[in-house]
Amino acid sequence: MIPTRMAAVHLTGYGGLDCLRYRTDVPTPQPGPGEVLIRVTAAGMNNTDINTRTGWYNSGVGDGTTEAGGQSGFGVDEGGMGDWAGDIRFPRIQGADCVGRIAAVGQGVDPARMGERVVCAPYIYDPEDPDWLENAGFLGSEHDGSFAQFTKVPARNAITVEDDLAFSDAQLATLPCSGGTAMNMMLMAGLKAGDVVLVTGASGGVGTFLIQLTKHYGAEVVAICSATKSSEVRAIGADHTIDRGTADHAGAALAATQGRKFTLIADVVGGERFAEYLSLLKRGGRYVTAGAIAGPTVSLDLRTLYLKNLSFFGSTAYLQETFPRLIEILHEGGLKPAVAATRPLSDIAAAQEAFLQKHHVGSMVLIPPQMEPTRKDMA
Image (tube, one colour):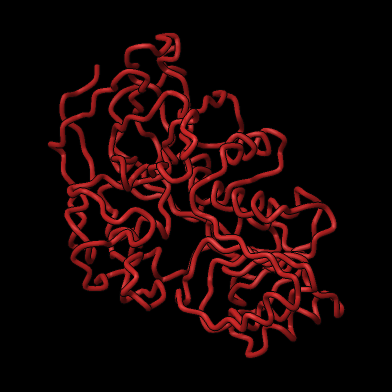
């Protein structure tokens, strides 16, 4: 039985952790035509959730995604989504990463899908829309997301995964945002066998997937992370690691490759080392970014761009093949999602505080209250 009210976290405005309100009286959504209702069993947590809450996407914010800013916000009142989406409507239920069971179906959806275990693609768009990239909405931003006991998505966004797939729901909940972002970056930049790849922010959710995808495609990867995380990052698949506290990243990177320059840089850090990273690209190299943890404003000498025939890619909204390809690689055995910790949804503020300290490797996952048995339990 589906309750009329559910537990969920409301984001009440742009700002600090005090803008997160855990409630148990939120109306349960109802699936419309072509939609399914998901009973959420696991919800991944990402930089995107914190950046949205704090209004960091506003062009007036020049700081990186610091621990202090993540806790208190950046003083943004409106336009918190910047060039991405302009603004969101409050209260909003965040959460881009959704794994669970289909609890109800809307008109036009096969009732046989009831009870399916699903992982949800986070971008919501009409595949028949020629401007789908411009009009794509994001789960947890333009649409209520997974920081709740129930959420609704278009049926096509709910991708069935078999009950006997050897991954927990918490592991699967790292795929939509972290895994999808990494997959989209690599598809846009044309990752291929033989590439020599530099990955920044390698110990985070996106970074750990970038490493695994690089190895799956037959490329060599040098990963930048803190020295305390080096062994874990190597265990994930990095061929070489560089201590992010090293003064000369470029020198250390070239030492790791025995002087070979890089064909691809996958960067989620940005900041003052941007120009240093570009110096590592060989002529015709590619640079792709999906984040700016160390700061969004960088210094670019345009001569570096055009004299070296470089290609730049910015990655946010997924290509239509991104999420299906990610799931294929999962089934091929090319991925092992890294879960650093799970916490109850009601502990979201403490979870985000821990996330901001950046002591973990991989992703953190929130678990909403579970009220009813799954289809497997009822079999």
